[in-house]
Every structure is written in structure tokens, then in C-alpha cells.
Image (cartoon, rainbow, N blue to C red; front, side, top):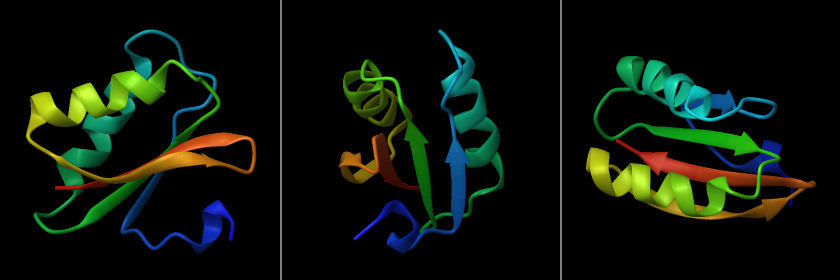
Length: 79
């Protein structure tokens, strides 16, 4: 299994972004995501393993799955 095999409506790569930039990209994608649709975010930053779940709780989003695959951390989020 690889990241490309994870089914989602929108894919967002937040690798290489610092500080608040990953969440700015996530918010931009969430603006076009319809209720019930899912977003797959990937990053190489380990710190996001704690930050994205907290972001999901604050935004009342469902974190369906998270993990590490293909040298990246992934987060499957449902609106």
C-alpha cells in the first residue's frame, strides 16, 4: 500500500511549509471541500503528527486516519 492508494476527494501536500503555512493550505482546501468529503494531507514534518489532530478537533473535523508511509506523514480528514 502507498499514499496514492488512499481514496480522497482532495489531496494537499504541505511538505516544505513552515509554521502556520500548512494550516493555511489546509484551510484553503477545506473551503472547497463539501460536507462528507475527505481530504488527504501529506507532509515530511514530524511535528504535524500532533498539530493536525489538534487542528481537526478545533475545526470540528473528523480525523479518519493518520500514519507514516512512503517517508511521509499522512492525515485523512473528513469534513
